[in-house]
Length: 186
Image (cartoon, rainbow, N blue to C red; front, side, top):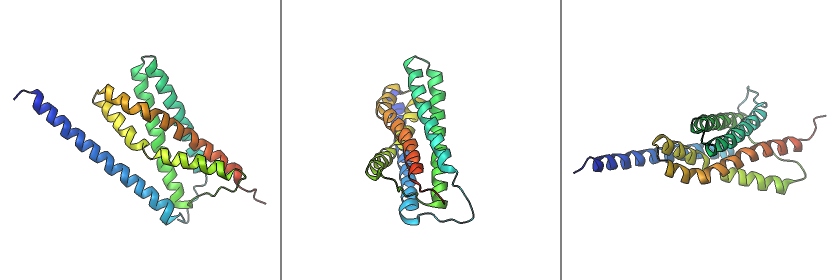
């Protein structure tokens, strides 16, 4: 048996372990989010995190800018800059997720009360549905880049990049639509 056969087998086992890990992390995150939004509905007293939606909008805007800058960098051949920008976008999105979960754990949902409810719900639905594959696809994308399997990396990012940018941008849009719909306090 050649040295290539054990290496290929080891690679497949490693891939399988990584994909299993990614599946577990993704299902756990989505399950926790579903529990938080659909079952628990907020209500932890004593902490005021009402500033976090604005922080989250900033993190989403930052992630979108970093993603677009990373795409430009890789198109220009600046691979090292691309790597830093993509890791930074992932960090911004991860911080967003932590802040989002903290806010909803404490305060629950914010209801839209504006005049454009149909448009708001369409944007929100597309934002939520498309956000679900971002974490597993981003993890897979990083894994392939780390393994220097750039053909596989590009296959994932061809789908991931526009989805991730869309989710980041619509996160900002949802924030401003919600803020515009909040009735004035007398």
